[in-house]
Length: 463
Picture 1: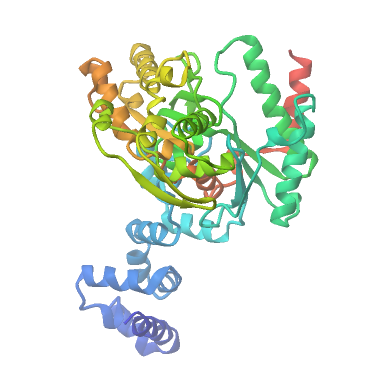
Picture 2: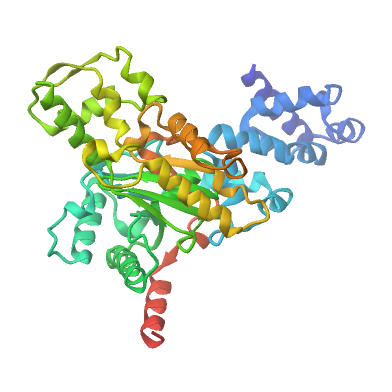
């Protein structure tokens, strides 16, 4: 059917350009043979033709151009041919940072036909998410990361300068991708670290960011966009404001983000529990129950495949929760260990850790956001986006919603929703992919080598 319609489209185009009779037909019947068809049928025809032939129709006559230039068609094409939050990105993020507050007002002024054309011509960019357990890297036009390996912290040792670690780290990525650094811009996630807002913490954050830029620019990368992992996770969930909860390798960070900006003065909370602690706790439980294993990798695999978070912990203790998984070392069967592992996020004392539970840290952050009154719509903080491998544990989002409703007063808890990692362990990478696929990229999101050098020079002159 679609092929036949394309032939009709091409025939209509040829007729118009070949003779006077087609001109007369055009004046008496603006859409030619398609003129008698209802508008909704014409719309379906254009969608079936696809973006390439829809663009051809624009040059047939003014009537076709008027019809095909409708934003609705190109929004449909954009969502079909450029998935992963393309519409959200183009209407909310395309202007760059800082984000516009009244993004809805920009929508009527956007020509999605132009946006689609720009995205089609856009070269691929390199997306690098350092992660906390392992790194994910790949192209912005890829469906998923093309490779994974160790984080930059595993390059060198504690005495190795940060710049040297990062230089080795990025060189390894570009070598594995078999691409020259000078050929494409890069989007890089910055680890969530240095949680307070003291002068020393600010200096440490700035030092890490400058080391990332310096390492990449010294490799001749033309433009770099470096963003916080929590912010990228928020964008991957099609949000610009909310609380990003990143369960990292060693700690869990609860980060309030308003309109794309981390609100450190409102308060970033940290829980001294991460993926490593959960894996270690499961290992201890397996040893106590005489379940033998050879490697920590096996324990981590069992955590990912069998563990979950109980919505009602006390009720779960009374159930038969036995389940098995065939790992490399053989068949493993777990029972209460399956939900006890995730429970330490809410009851850290079970693992011998003196810290607040994850639900308590999020509730405290929400309370601070509520008191700050940052926006007329004071519900911005009621969206919680989870990220990190451990955040993918089944039941975690439901349990958090339940605990937050019981901890907070109705004025704060009403309307809370917790979003599981939208793209699993790759959530932050997909946030970077959304940025790297913008029709305006690199543009306002990126810093060039010249801009970085000028800013560094200015900072040295004006401390």
